[in-house]
Image (cartoon, rainbow, N blue to C red; front, side):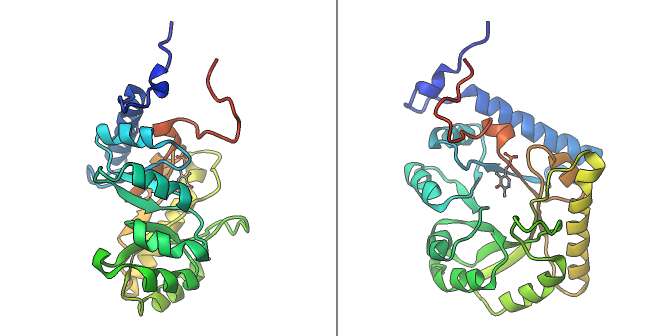
Length: 251
Ligand SMILES: *Cc1c(COP(=O)(O)O)cnc(C)c1O
């Protein structure tokens, strides 16, 4: 008999051992990939993607040692931040940026992974509260050319970063990509290798970009193999995201 996840129903903050176990399993996957692909141990940071998941699960992950969380929807993220404000968390915005949300992003987030529109860059720069220091950002790159996905074409990245150089309240830290799912490990590695090669080319032209934000639940090993410094993992930590379906329990 499997134990039922009754703690889901307990809103008093009792921690969910399932979240802690899944988090530990993801960290073990990252460590194993670092070892297997000759990466420096502990050089890959885990961003726990908590979009659409309740604040209680974020608190569980915090109890298990996780500090950095990724959110895609500003309104939802701000509600959760308010509920969890007593915890020393760092919040990464990884979703599609909307022009009317840049002030909230600049004010309430510690990182942005998904910047690729110079108008958004200018707004984030102008709206970043000075006391928070420059906002670290990754430039999102679209390597597959899928029209549905955001991001700059690789050839546009250097010019974009040049334009951002005059924005003192943004600090361009690296590149981010969100590729289409690869059919196998080699196919998964290809876009990550392309992002790393782009990063290396830019470094040779005096644009150092230490951060590579790439890899998710299904392809984090491939991303670590190709030099990811941040992997963004949701499902493997928090379970499937609640959809619009009213009933998502397993019985
Ligand atoms: C949702 C999301 C993730 C996490 O995806 P999982 O497959 O659940 O690990 C990572 N990055 C971005 C940009 C996302 O939107």
